[in-house]
Image 1 (cartoon, rainbow, N blue to C red):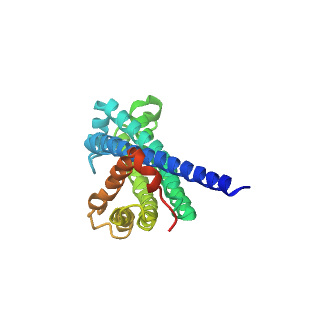
Image 2 (image 1 turned 135 degrees about the horizontal axis):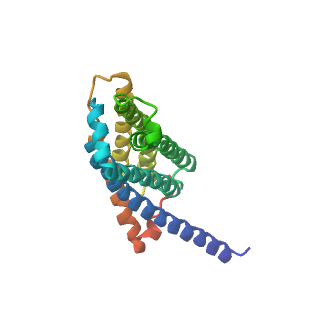
Image 3 (image 1 turned 90 degrees about the vertical axis):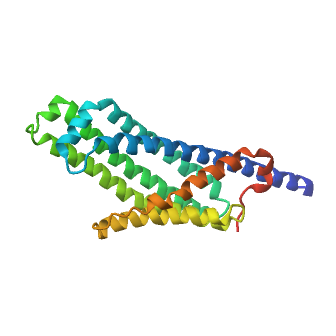
Length: 249
């Protein structure tokens, strides 16, 4: 093989890598922003407005009176899970030039979180079924039904909280890779890493120190939002991409 053909082949590989990274950046950026919208609607707007802590009767009544909103909340959360899988792929592709094995590990952690989150959502479906399916409702006394519904809802929140520890580890790995990339702002990597620590510590604190009610991720999540914006802006700048593709460091 001649020197010229070898150089051409290397340039083709480099160009293909840059293109795939640019696509991955766009996918992750758009995916993270969409996830934010659906997550806010599904949890903060739908679930949190219907579920009243320690009041099973009111919660059951709220769900029955706002069944469509509850269903839309479940639907939105399922969309978030699907987007999570897509983002896991996109971040793996985008960060693998920095460190292939760590990028793969981070992707698996996010997929693991998605699986746990999906199992947790089944509890929401069960709660809805207890209230709307006569065959399920017949299994319990009328005064027992709200308590069973609340148990299913609590099971969802417990599964979600446990999964966030895995999600946090994924962000810690991603933040480290961003910091080491040499092509992305190091402060962005630190903020993503801190966001991961926030999610993971929230789970551990809830398990080990339940008397504390501080939610660190409410303050540290900003790193994920900034990452979405940076990737979207970077991915849209096609002319700058060829020289901006990530590289091993």
